Image 1 (cartoon, rainbow, N blue to C red):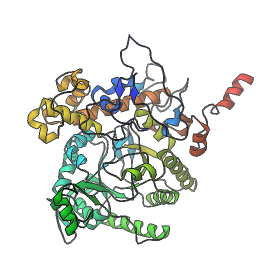
Image 2 (spheres, one colour):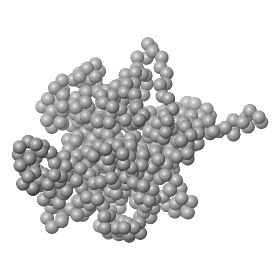
Image 3 (cartoon, rainbow, N blue to C red):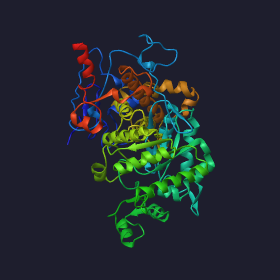
Image 4 (tube, one colour):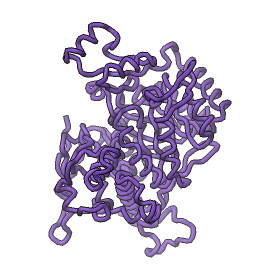
Length: 546
């Protein structure tokens, strides 16, 4: 098994645990005191784009070409002349062709276009408790940056305060709080997306949302995700809560209503219960039946009043991928998230996560291929978002290029949660009266933070940019986790702009598959991206022999 380095001496970053291909630890802790690249970038922002200790060092790449296929086996092309996609009013002079002038705004949608400031979105933040704890930081951060955030499945179903009568939601305080927090800071860019699974459909989530929020929200149907091939799970340690969830219709393992299980819990031998969601489409046996069911569901949602609908599919095989692309396109959905098996989750069976499904780069390469088959027939192709183990600005560029022109966004799950953790822990120390409210985990600032400063203004590189946006008076209401989110997003944006400028592409719609290369022959064979020294080889020979 390929092992990724735990330490990056050039950036001064270290992984607490075992690093994954994304650069994040395989187990990312909310109480972590640092300091992986994403963790540090949540404080330092775009400074993390460069080697540390300027003036005392030189730095050289330690990246060797990986064996096998992964996003790290793709290289980004640079060019020595030209400039494409410059905004109106800019010339091709060297004074205008600078990376800050690269436009990274994007949009997606069928009938209604949704604008996005930078081409990232969060993964689905649903019923896992860690999503609820840090929601304010993540939602406000996403709204301020101008990117979409997804409320994941089962939020209503696990809410003790939610009232469901005869299959109809009467009251959903947790869902309302999440939606309203985002909308309070929404500024015309981004979107609040609510995901639905089997239980959410039964509970009438779609009807509740459209009646209360109308076209302010986007609805997402869920076929699956990359981390697992069964429904979502959470773990609970309260047997009364476990019984509540079972009575609300969930699968709870072990069954908390069984006398033997209750005795085991009472004795202390059993300490937790897992709540599971159900599989979809279990009563269907063919793709034709899936099509009929799916298009019928979309028709129902349109009749309810939904203008914007999306679909998320997981790391299934090629038939499911083809169905997702075809049906999402035919139903005029706003986008399709294709989630590969390299990503993460709040809770999944570990060995399932390690061994099931199609790895992201392979799934994404096939998504491009299948989208091209539709396009060649003159049919509309749904806008797409790629997800699964993506965390850095180079990942954003590569994913957009691999799926161009169909990919509009890159979905980042765990990476965009890290600033929520870091900022909340800092706020809990500097503002102890808010520690419980923000779920801070630290008693004091670790050296990784205190070396930067002891006040928020000193610690977060993005502090004054956020203050400029919301105003000095309103700044007191912005969670530190949201400031950290902004700071990380600024680093990702600047890094993406730099990579695009090097490729001479000054707007996202100019990125193409010609802007990436395969670093080994296996990656070439599996993705259709040519081997790096084969690209432009014919042009090179003309120059030399012409």
